[in-house]
Length: 457
Image (tube, rainbow, N blue to C red; front, side):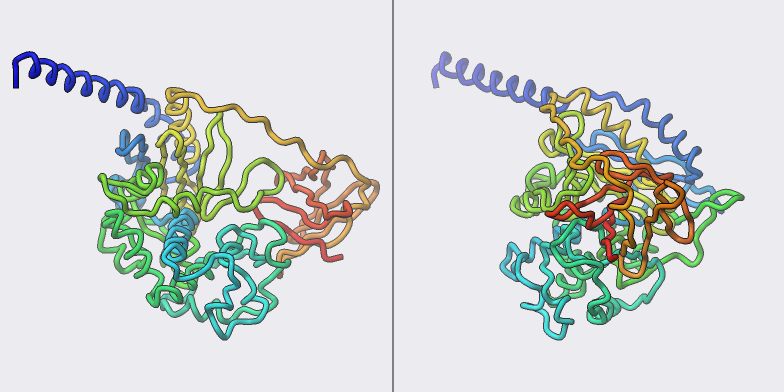
């Protein structure tokens, strides 16, 4: 090689290196998360939560991770990032990923009736599809019993016990959040893989991703550093004893994990299934989970498979929160910017959402802007009070609307309150009820808190 050729080669290499460094700088701006600790500490204090942790992902790495507070109010042991927390419903994205992976392998068709694959089911239950289960369009009413059998055979026994009474409306009719739909999805994972749900999700998701401490089994979780679950009492946070467990409901909300392991899932998700330079999840699985499947009444958000899809500050955000006895969590991802935030906490229903939102603000303000979106207008309008009068069902639970003394009165759990008509919804002390009408304009459902209630008379 001549001297001139060598110089040119070195110059080209330097140019390539500089371009790479410039691109990396554009993709991974310097972000200041110094305010997070103060926000997290205040959120723990204001919610009566002993402790929690956060991790922030950008590109293919964790750029910020921090633990806060204590893991157990009885020992005052500090939370560490490696400590396990039980996630609650953020489990659903993992259940969805495992079932869609089996579908990609040809083990089942997500749009075929489940009775095609599973014999001995109630006829109506057998007509539900995996697509409807994963997108909360099964028509199953919701419930989330925290305590139950510890035997893993409870999942199949539960699903096979269902009859027509499991439905509050017809499958495919409307979006309505249903934990039992994900129990069934977990059972389909068992049936399609011929393995226990916890074993199959370990083999197809946790293992390949390198989530080495993550488990569904409490007797495994207790062998790792574990933050105890707490509930709030007038005297302050208290350890829940005995710890809640119900093996039949594991697929809907029972994973034990930490922010370190969860970061590996987020890295894979925002990088088309790649982590540590290896393809561990099929890109088709990532696309399938983040594709809108069902419109959530009352706004512009949709639900995919195990993920809510919304638009925030010009970015498409896929996310899910979790709440179960003793714990809460949140996973929020912006795939177009390869960004994600994970938070976990050890008090019932607290997912450190304020802390997660602050991390989102810091990062999204520094990243290249997204495209603005215009919210869809409300579909309804003011209507006569009598239009809403009737009884509405969510399976065994009902609410009633009646007109009394010129006011519209909502009765729920023996409690009455006046409600006001506002656009396509009803405003009550507990929030907003979205009105969903059928093709003829008659009120067919009310929707609040992710659940739909069918008008039955």
